[in-house]
Length: 332
Image (spheres, rainbow, N blue to C red):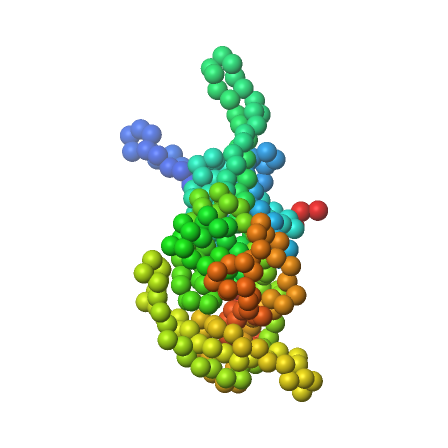
């Protein structure tokens, strides 16, 4: 290496060349060749740092006051390496932007998201440049993806037409799981059903209560109930849920008063006396729907005071492992 330094970008090599010229005579000459080492990037890397290199952007938005869905999507994206073709990722208060070099890469990413969350896509494009002689144009493609503002454990009030379409399930349901559709369960009968993406966006209902409004209750007594299933009810997953009549009290009221609540819950298979359970308090809720929910035949004019959602297992301390995170930029 030149200048006596191993990290210098110049390399000197001495080359000796020889050749037989005539009558067995050999001509030989030595020369020194200087090589300069230059670092280069591949074309994809060069395009990622160039201005205006992207041709498609996927704008993912969810109109809620939390980011539970995006934390879930982040881990799903990392698990399947769906962000491999992204040039850059920018985060906003209510969503994220994914930039791609080609339109086909953005379309594949759209299909990936639609398989894991209920989405609605709006497509638009903008002309950047055009060659009228060869009839060729350069476009910037924009995909706006709206994620349904529904998350796990949310309390829903289904429209009357939709409830009749779903095997006449109760209008008051809980969100058991969110996938390509909404998997809901009736907390009073343990009946389950699924609201697919098409049906959700047709009616466009909102959540009445979300997980930030859950209250902790202490289970005082549990009495199993005989479960009767309607002929038209649709039950999935082997019917693991069991109905039970539970007597609970607010954890904050213990020692202050003797207020107790009795309710029917679908968590009879896991609840025991002394357990902590999370639920929604319905005594002070304002039902903002098209017709009075108290008139529903299911409750016979008596709306329950609370709905139990899930059992609380408590914190098990700090994790010994950390979650992976996407390399994102924060918008100003």
